[in-house]
Image 1 (cartoon, helix red, strand yellow):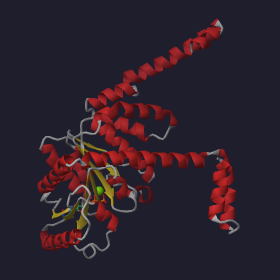
Image 2 (cartoon, protein in one colour; image 1 turned 90 degrees about the vertical axis):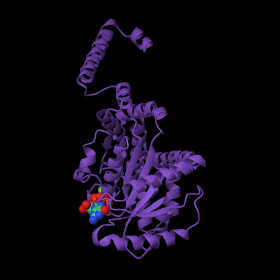
Image 3 (cartoon, rainbow, N blue to C red; image 1 turned 60 degrees about the vertical axis):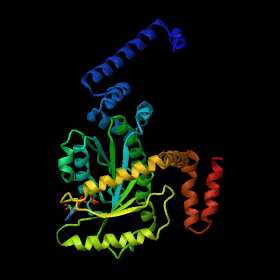
Image 4 (cartoon, protein in one colour; image 1 turned 180 degrees about the vertical axis):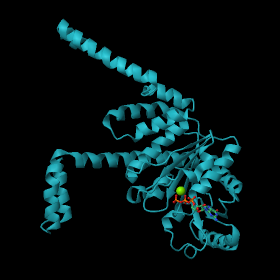
Amino acid sequence: MADTAANQSPKDQAVSNRQEAQSNSVHNIKIARGIAPTTAKLYEQILKGDTAALSRGITLIESAANKHQNAAQTLLSLCLPHSGKSLRIGVTGVPGVGKSTLIEQLGLYLIQQGKRVAVLAIDPTSSISQGSILGDKTRMEQLTQQKEAFIRPTPSRLSLGGVARHTREAIVLCEAAHYDVILIETVGVGQSETTVHEMTDFFLLLQLAGAGDGLQGIKRGIIEMADAIVINKADGKNIKAAENACMDYKKALALFPDKTNTWKPQTMVCSALENQGISELWDMICVHEGLTRSNGSFEQQRRSQNIYWMQETIKSRLQSDFFDHPKIKKGLPQEMKAVSALEKTPFEAANNLLKLIR
Ligand SMILES: Nc1nc2c(ncn2[C@@H]2O[C@H](COP(=O)(O)OP(=O)(O)OP(=O)(O)O)[C@@H](O)[C@H]2O)c(=O)[nH]1
Ligand SMILES: [Mg+2]
C-alpha cells in the first residue's frame, strides 16, 4: 500500500485520501448508529450474550453474499474457542407429532432450572411447501417471551445442505453466547435426521401411538440413530394406546445391536401439551450425558462429527466449484443433451466433463 501511495501523484493521492476518508466516515456513522457493527464488536456483544448481536451474527453467516463471507469466517473463528460447552439435542418426528410443543415445554423447564436455551431448526420441507417448522411462532409463544431463550427459525430459501451448514455454524455462535442447551428441531423426512444426528449429542425421535404398527413405517436408520423414542400425546383417551406403543417400541429396540457407546436407547411416553413427562425426559438426557462423558464417547462423537463436517464442506465446495467452472458451464448442456438422446452413457458424459478441468 505504501508503495502505491508513493507512486501516486500528489493530486491522485489527495483524491484517494478524500475517498478513503469519505468511506470511513460513512462506515463510522453506520457503526455509530449501530447499523453495521464491526465483526470484532459483534463478537464482543455475542460473548456478552446479547441476543440482537447473536441474531445479526447468524444472519451474517447465512448471507450468501461474497462480501459477507470473510466477515462471517472471522466471526466464527473468534467464537470457536468459546464454543463446545452446550448440550446439543436433536428432536425429530413426522409433521404434527408435537416437536415444537415439546421443545417449548422442555425449554421452559430448563429455564426454571437456571439454564439458557437456544432453539434452531432444520426444515428440508420449507423450500418445497413454503412452510417452516418455527414459522408459526405462536407455537412457542411462552418460550419466545423468556429472556433466557433464543429461538431462530430456519430460512426457507436455503437447500438442506445450506441450512445444515448454517445450523452447524449457528451452534458455534449460540455457544459463544453462553447457551447451555441447544435444541434442534427437524421434520422426520429425507436426509435431515442424519444431518441433525451429526451435529447433536442426544437424538430424540418423537412418535405417536398407532401411527403404523410398532416400528413399521419408520426407517430403520432413524431407529439406529435414536437415543430415545418418546411417544407424545399420551393424554386423554390416548394414554393407554401410547403406553402400549411404548411397550412395542421397547421390545423392538431390544432386537437392535448395542450402541458402541454402551447407551441403551430408552422409550417413554409424554404429553407435551399437558406438560407430563418433561422432567423425566430431561433426567434421561442427563443420565445419557453422564454415561457418555464418563466413558469418553461424548468427546469421541464430537470429534467424529467435526471430521464429518469437514468432509461435507469439502464435498459441497468441490461440487459448487465444478458447476461454476466456465468450461463446465459451457460443456454441460451439450453432454446432457447427448445423455438424454441416448447417444452417450451417463458415465461417459461425466468423464468427458471431469476431463475438462483436470
Ligand atoms: N393432545 C396433544 N396434542 C399435542 C401434544 N403436543 C402437541 N400437540 C398438538 O399437536 C399439534 C402439532 O404440534 P406441534 O408442536 O406444532 O408439532 P410439530 O411436530 O412441531 O409440527 P411441525 O413443526 O409442523 O412438523 C398442535 O396442535 C399441538 O397443540 C400433546 O402432547 N397432546
Ligand atoms: Mg414444529
